[in-house]
Image 1 (cartoon, rainbow, N blue to C red):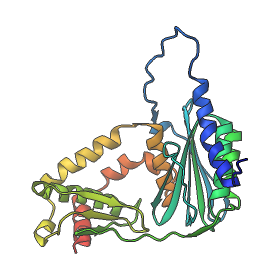
Image 2 (image 1 turned 30 degrees about the horizontal axis):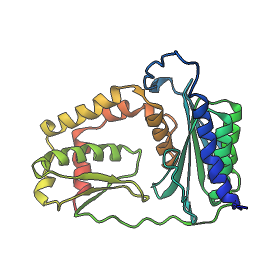
Image 3 (image 1 turned 90 degrees about the vertical axis):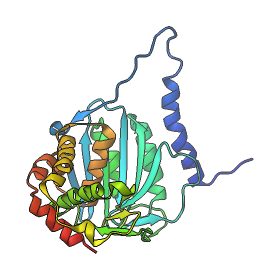
Length: 296
């Protein structure tokens, strides 16, 4: 007779429940031609983001996406589990680190029972800590939010302090704090810098894992690259960011990612909808200040 540990049983249940929901949709009435499902999207200006602080350092972030086909749930906290997931469920669960915190995200179908199973598993796997945010997005009701809120209660997993080792890089620029005007000016400056490096096939990537974000570049940065930014250089970069901000429709995945960013960096709940206004307030002088402050 086979014997499974409690944690192994949770993993089996965790994988099986979403599959049951999928299998129930397969083999329905023959002869019915399935229509192509268009990607779902919602307008940023219509979103009602809500926060509920249950205790100091423990907050539930929610956004109701009407008729969304998936429920997304993310926990972000300062402790990382010592027990690794050893089963291939990448499509349902992902882990990452951002802003000096550990994150785990679960994507379930819009099914309350599947969500409850996921929360039961996370309560047994994740360690308890002083600071924790729970972010849930999708087609929400009181029951689903109450289930997610259980993750703000004490957890029973084993854990350790999250530590982030620096990534190797030839060029490295430190970003101002997320959500500040200085950080937005820095974004524009990095765009100009990429233009100046365009003939060198640059690889420019962000590292958001630690408390202070960094831009990593695969080459050394000479002083010549840090000459003052001109209006002509800034215009195409600003135009690209402005065009993106003017697109008010976003997918459920994008909205959830914005909400997680707000939770990690303790940003205002309307942060994701105000990018266009904040961008228009950044001047050439702001961008040059960001350039001067980032110079090695």
